[in-house]
Picture 1 (cartoon, rainbow, N blue to C red):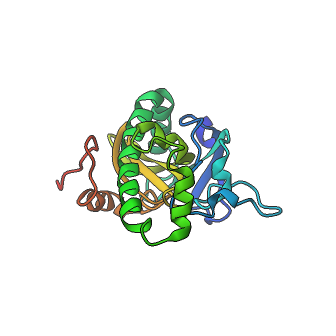
Picture 2 (picture 1 turned 90 degrees about the horizontal axis):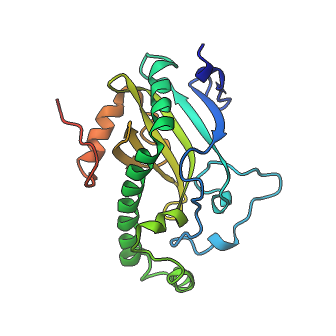
Picture 3 (picture 1 turned 120 degrees about the horizontal axis):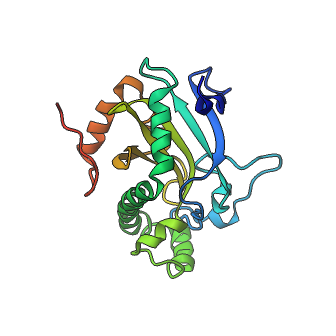
Amino acid sequence: MSAFLDQFEPDPEMDGETLVWKTDKPLFQDAVVAFAPPYPEYPKLKLGRGRQPSCDPSCPSARDVGDEIVVTLYSNNDKGFGDYQERAWEYIMTQSPEIETSLRRKLFAQHQKAHKQFLEEYLPDDRKTQNYWKKIENELDWQDASAIDQLYKLVGIGLVDNGLDECGFSSFEFQTGWDRDHGTAILMHKSHVLAAGGMQEDISRGPELIDSIKYVQSYDLDEGDLALTES
């Protein structure tokens, strides 16, 4: 086993299908979920007795910065735990600024869509949501890219034994104020964004992962994303 793999332990909830490791957050160190517009109850939520902060998209600890993330290794493509995931991690550690720039672009595009949908579909018919929105709408410049630092918190990175150029795909997992049920994950190849979805939604699809990426890209491809061809 390599020194990289030695840091991981089996995830007790996944029967050996994944390995996990807690480490310092390499990106988005100061980002939190300060606001959750569709959830008027959000400011009053607290961790229950005995409950620890977690990566769960609905956990109130999303308001706290935190300094750690959970790195998860997936082995769904018969390559096992090894080179593909380690190359992906090495790329993240050496190219963090470039990766964060790509992530911010994608997150802002997703934020703009969620903000528009919120104003048009959710806000008009819910009095509690309207009251909450009155309190927070002037607290943030919702049209500026800086808004994502108050709406997305990085809590995990997934690495899989499937990818391009013998480098595994990576998935950056965020709690978000736009979707406290599913969170947001940005799937990438090196510094190139492939797709966005819910937390762990795509990275765990195994041999169907590339087909899943192509399907998502058929209806949700933002400028700057790396489009996978049908060939």
